[in-house]
Image 1 (cartoon, one colour):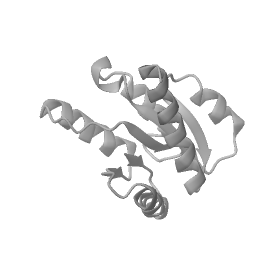
Image 2 (cartoon, helix red, strand yellow):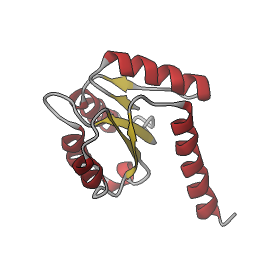
Image 3 (cartoon, rainbow, N blue to C red):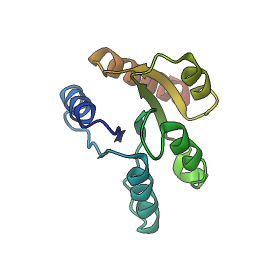
Image 4 (tube, rainbow, N blue to C red):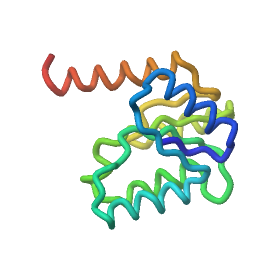
Length: 136
């Protein structure tokens, strides 16, 4: 799932994700509010399509990335337990980085734009976690 108020970065990030993982279904939203509404509807409709990874912009109008994370904590643990959030920002404010570390489902913090190397880092985190979980 991609959440970013900047259409340019939504398109760019989707293109990079599609290039590196052509079979991955990518859901994208241009606001945190619309992403949360979709997530609530998904639970109500008992749909199984729940995001495993969320690339989340920090600086957005109306509801920023940190507000989104606070709302995400309100979802049932069964739904958020396996979510990995990767914070994305064009800001160099170190306070954002420090604040992001207080959320257990935030796995990493990247400065825009997303690159193939960042995707590889995300994939290596997932592989490492999978190997640790299976004892491999």
